[in-house]
Length: 409
Image (tube, rainbow, N blue to C red; front, top):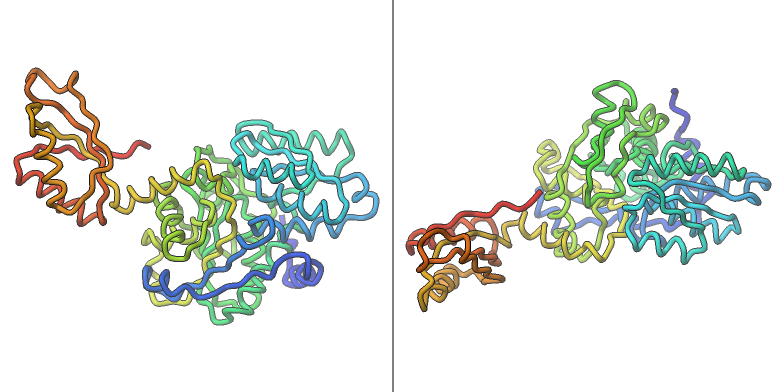
């Protein structure tokens, strides 16, 4: 399949959606720049009305419908953000919208789609399950299908972000772009490379759905199994044919990040930028923060913070996972005396090392034959990995035998 989206298409999309979609800011982040050793700018498309860049492509596609298509309405499969964009702009334009969402879609996105007037159908355990039903509905009910990423109209709309970035940071050395189905990647890469051929495009995928790297290795879109991921917006098992054809020759490298790195990036953005992002958007920072891009040290880079629709029911778990990854929460097992003062001696040693006890759980039944000792599982709050090492050394010096407890997963 040949590339079907050009800079002219993207500029036309920008004119078409002007005044309907926010032209989001792209400020320099001083704390992130200091943290990663590069000049970091953040493209804040999470400030869109529905919380994500997906509005760009959805709005452009809806505006290109003819009168008959508008009257019948559209259908799409989406894990959430594309559905939100269609629902919002469909409502403004008077176009009926049906969205099929996989059952793992965040509850906040499902509820918001319904509030915006879309007909929401929850179907399947994967995006592909939802996509298949959307295809069937389109054929059965005569609706126009608007694919979330494998659609030239949508890709052109997403590419408008690239135009805005290079207006604000014309000398950017690299763009770090989260990618799942690759629609955003394709549109931004076309715009950026056309305007600044020397710019580097870094694609970031989650290890739970490494479709883009697998497809590059195979030379064609290749399906991969999907695992549960905090970056649900990137959980696509098969990259789109059209965006892959466009993006493959334009992407300079692909970075794969894991769940702990995504959680830590969410935490860093909360603390340093006072910005709440969803896992898919945090993947951009995770790639740089995790040391995957040493060639960007000292360079001027733009992180595409493309969505902020994180489910509040899991935000606390994301923060907890980030704290563990950051060495600010540590769990260990220890054997202590079960006589009076045994637990006090342990907590005193922890306090002396400057850590704070969060939780202690006794395990007398499985602590061995010595009825005068007990096992305890201890969770402490620490200042970082160096502090964890110092605490372990202090406990050992005090005569305690401790066993670090690995995080599950």
